[in-house]
Length: 83
Image 1: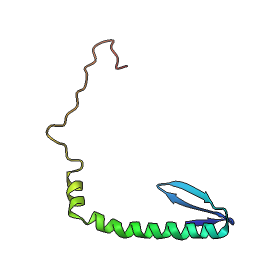
Image 2: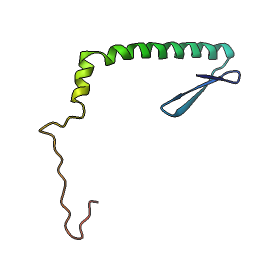
Image 3: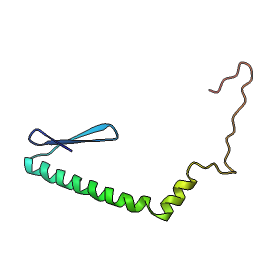
């Protein structure tokens, strides 16, 4: 989080910069406290979520192909197109 100017603040998330402008200096500071508090809560809950058995089970099965999952690819004959 970065304080910018009198009323502005910004942060980067996934490579994108998000900038906010509050009406007053005090409002900006209260937004900073609120966002920083929620970010800390999210970091704390992340450990509980990623450590849960349900999450681990889901992640183990994620990316494994199912036997009943397949794709049908149409054949293209001379001069035909997929439009």
